[in-house]
Amino acid sequence: AAAAAAADLSLRPKPACQHYPQRRCNLVAKCCGKAYPCRFCHDDEADHEIDRFATEQVVCNECGLVQGVAAECAGCGIRFSDYFCAVCRLWKTADRRFNAATGEEEVTTFHCDKCGICRVGFRSDLHHCDACGICITREALPSHKCFPDKFRQRCAVCRVSLHDSQMAPVDMVLCDHVLHHECLRNLLRQGHFRCPLCKVSMIDMADSWRRMRLQVTLQPLTPDIARLCDCYCQDCGTNHVGVVAHPVGVECPVCGSFNTSLSAFREMPDDYAAEVCGRQEATLRAMLEEHNLSLNVGGNMTETWVLEELFRRVEMVFEAEEARAEAEAEERGAGNDGSGDDGGMLQEDASLGGADDGGDEDDDDDDDD
Image (cartoon, rainbow, N blue to C red):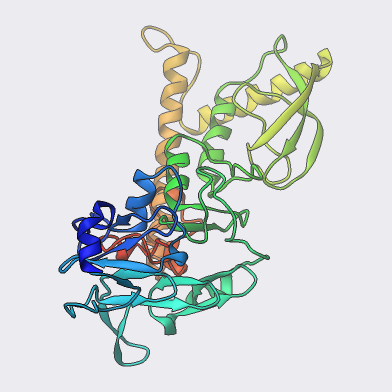
């Protein structure tokens, strides 16, 4: 067999790859009969995807022996990796960590029969949700919402499987859909706050709505541009007829969200337009008086300057309130939840048992297949 491996160039083992630098064998893809350091290397080079579960042979990196799937080489006796799963055809580095719950040192990778793949984490810390089809931490069970095959779908952004992807999934609290964590981050960085599936706000937008409400107040309508429209609120699911349209956005009368879809724009009756515009003007002047400002200015202090100064002062009030709320949260033990720029409304990969076949370098991310 070793001689055959030497003769067949396609079965000569390649050096360990960046995905699994500690792996000491190559798997032989049953689909094309060639040796690759791992399934990711195969998919990167080939024009098709490998069925890793169908793998029947491996090549030892040390002696070149082609042999059946095993934890150790049948020729030279070396162990191919710290962790081996015969079901997943997985050889990888597996850390051993002290588990306070059991009082024993355990391997942080295990095979979940119900998931059908290996997971990162302590087996005792994870619970398999039969409805969603994934392992989640026991601490997340009280807040976990499930529905059939929730994670056995493709990410709406990249169209890669959520169940056995290299990337960690995020269980969004507000709409219960699931995206890859990095895909969600990219959406938020680009200013997309709505779920690509249901259009509900993916994160808590209360601060953004408050600032948009301020922008509406600072820009009262005039009768010549006042219009009515119908709107549907994507966040609370209510329809509204005959609401006042504004260039900044239209606020839902029920929940205060600006995540609204507008339709049926129409002229506003003159008397009603005068009433609406007068009311908006009065609101602005009341806010100006509260901050000791006036639109009746001269010299270099233009009306635009006054409105910008008002915005700056109100923004300072908002920031002070947010800082106070954060301090109160820390005092209650809520502190930093590691949610970064997602508003703290995401049930991140820390609450999900990550799939484990994304390489030895990213084990701490709990996000591989």
